Length: 204
Image 1: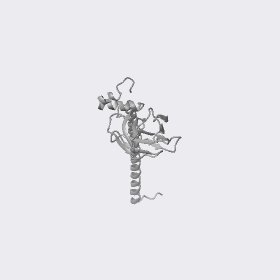
Image 2 (image 1 turned 90 degrees about the vertical axis):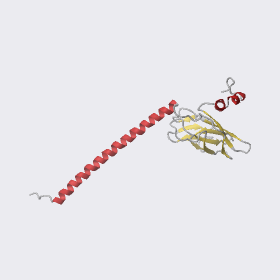
Image 3 (image 1 turned 60 degrees about the vertical axis):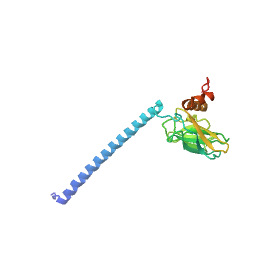
Image 4 (image 1 turned 30 degrees about the horizontal axis):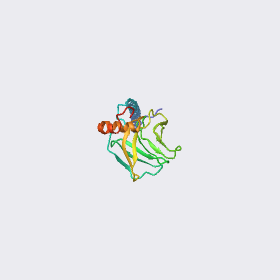
């Protein structure tokens, strides 16, 4: 003979069932939200990648700026980061072990992640993008490994008589320093560009 269920037990069973339903609904919502977020982010990455590769976004090396002192002294094997030519253009100057000073944009040419200096890697150190394991030569900015499609844009750096390092111009990815400087001079001071020989055939 079956004993009738007490009212309290029936209420608890109903609450338990309602709780299970609510948890299931919340889990479904969470999964749906997660999938929607993943789809949105993935789509954004695809669009961003396409826009960057198409050259629609601002490229480091476009535009000019006054000379900027980036370091009072830069020891061998060390690097200094700064913003140039604009306040949002991330850049880096490095003194190689042989004393050469080089400068680059630190915006990876793959998907615009930040590029880092790794002194301990290779014979001269290397510039490394941790997002997708892109690697650039510290001496030339050329791609040596990973997915980046182009070299790093150059930041033209010079050293004064006191040993301070200055950024004085930029060059686009694959453009020579002279071509970058001449392009900036042509835009800002055509007369000075002509005097510097920038308008001569083959100057850029």
